[in-house]
Amino acid sequence: MTVTRRAALATPLLLLGAAASRAQTRWQMATPYPDGNFHTRNIREMVAEVEQATGGRLSIQVHSNASLLPMPQIKAGVQRGQVQMGEILLTAYANEDPFFDADAIPFLVSGFADAKRLAALQRPFVEQRLQRQGLSLLYTVAWPPAGFYTQVPLTSLEVLRGSRFRTFSPMTNRFAALIGASPVLVQQAEVAQAFATGIATAMVTSAQTGVDTAAWDYARVFTPATFSMTKNAVIVSRRALEGLPQDHRQALLAAAEKANERGWRWSEEAEEASVKRLAERGMQIGTVTDELRTQLAEINRVMTEEWIQRAGEDGRKLIEQFRAGA
Image (tube, rainbow, N blue to C red; front, side):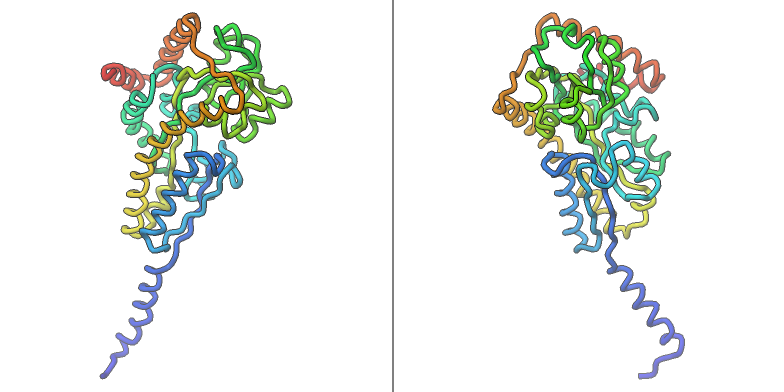
């Protein structure tokens, strides 16, 4: 068979293209949470599904427990291309835009059904803002309801007055100021040390975080109060996402959709298991008194209106839509 010169020259290029289509793409992903946390387990499940669907041609290495980047640097790391994917706590970035903070408004939601409705309403606003920053939102999953960690039973907010109150976002900083506590910004990986050294004496966060940080070693009482149900967001560089072959991109998006559904289910399961674990380790599980409930309702009124003022007309629209569906 005669092979023309043009065909001979084209053959290596075709082989090169075929090899490129089979080449492995290696991504890095940073998350601030430990491997035992349900958020991290959910991510690893998603990554395994992506690698299976792509025959291993898209490989994602997960760096957990802030081992690669601390949480405040993860979003910027994805934007700069330092990592291709990351997991962030949305509310921690509220100084950039108040819509990252909508789920952190204290006592806005009463449980998982409310939190899911709010997430659906909030998502388009969050997606628009992330897209302007070169990012794409894969999915969000709420933490179990946040409660209070104290040394004595929380009968009223007076118990927290004057405390060194661990915070992790602008909203928790504002809450501390309203109740007369001193806010202390502490990332999750440093919580136990902060309490052990007296830097922090009280905090509000989920029972899951209490288990992750062995709260029974530094606090005596956990009071479930559905303070908020903040969400983690798994984000990806738009440039990296759009640079994937279409079948790999679709595999990632499909796995992310499954991770969204699975993550919310695991969050509900984690709530019950985590509170049970705290009790088993000797922590007292408190209840919300009538006095405390009245005080918390007033906090919600004040902080919701403050958030609307920051968020503008879009913020008012979001809150109205959420309340209309209550």
